[in-house]
Image (spheres, rainbow, N blue to C red):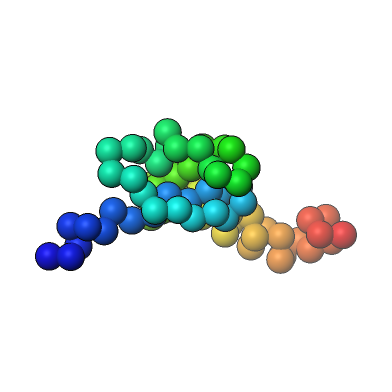
Length: 70
Ligand SMILES: [Zn+2]
C-alpha cells in the first residue's frame, strides 16, 4: 500500500512548476515557489479544465496562425 504515501503534485499553470503536494495543505492555498501565484492540484477538475481550455486555444492558434502568432 505505498499509494497511501503518494499525495500527487501541485502544479503552477503559470510557469509549469510542479511540487509535491503537502498533506493537509490544499494546492490552491499553496504559493508557487517560482512566481508566487496560487497552484493547482495536478489532474484535478480545475487543472483539467485549464488544460482543455489551453488546448482549444492552441487549436484556434494553429488554424488561425497569422492573427495569433504573427
Ligand atoms: Zn509559478
